[in-house]
Amino acid sequence: MKILQVVDGYGWGGTKEQVYLTTRELRKKGVDVHIALSFQYKEMVEKLRPYDVPVHFFENHLKNARYRFENYKRLIKIIDENRFDVVIGNSPHAFDYVRIAKIFLKTKPKIINVKRSGRLPSFLSKYLKYSAADRIVVVSKNVEKFLREKNFFPEKLVTIQSGIDLSRFKPNPEKAQLRKKLGLPLDKKIFINVANWNPQVKAQDKLLEAFARANIPDSYLIFVGIDTDRHIETLSKKFGIKNAVGLGFRKEIPDLLNASDFFVLSSNLEGIAGALLQAMATGKVVLSTLAGGIDEYLVDGYNGFSVDVGDFESLKEKMIKMSKISEEDYKKLSENAVKTAQSYSIEKNAEKYIKLFEELLNEK
Image (cartoon, rainbow, N blue to C red; front, side, top):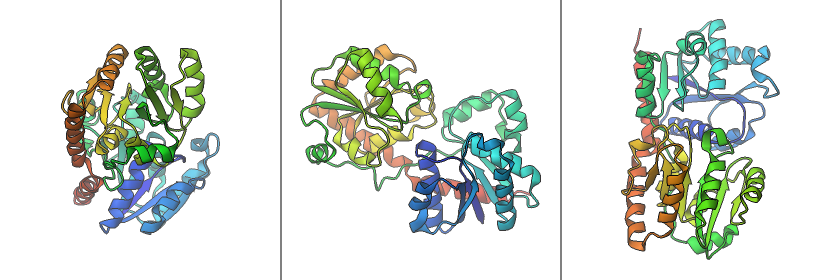
């Protein structure tokens, strides 16, 4: 089988991480998988280079890239010349390219859309865009259930939960050494949030406000992700606190997690929340809103703590509770978190994709 992963734009985040990991694992399992991306996306190219994944450039990621027909022409040519069996659009914008390209293709590949959140598309988008997919992959059972209830192509829906790289995300007991290496305070209880700046979805502004109101002694809150460095500095002044910092985009996420004590996710909307699973894999005691599919694996008091979406008063109280936790209780929660994360390996994710490809290609 011959597979094409299509991804738009550049930068790094949950979607790009999943595309990279899935592509890597499919290649390691012997699948002839290619990737189509923007001319500007050097980081993905470098990360996939050791795995000999064929790379095709189609998108010149300038302003209004989706309105530039030359981007579509390049993608059409790539698909037709390589005669792919399956083409995967990995984000709403990537699927825009795939959907339009399908109209002009001479070949007839199976089309997969990957939908990573539970946001319901508009009526027009549903029928003009998503109707073109042979399968719609969602990343949590809760999202699938919600979309089925809304009659969003129930016959096309399939759940393949996101996977994490357990070879990178694992406990490291050398916390003090990691803090010295990263320039983090040695004597503070460190809370960490990992998400690119997007307050409408990730609610980092509300998390910072809750942390300020919690007023936890000897505590420190770190935000990691694109643009967090700019925005957290401004908001910290607004809330009158000096024990929070935005580090911006960082590559050493496993080290930052292992250097921290607690992980907090305040999202209004999620798929499966890969960053939360990564934190659990490193043995952090975690706190999260139950957005998207998070309640499929996060059990309050067993492998972490949870609050309802938008309940920032409870988020504040749970942060205070976490800061006072005993070593014995921390150890239990940590061990259970690691066990939970083991079920979400990227290897299992790739195996499910291969099964889906085989199923699609056996259809007439």
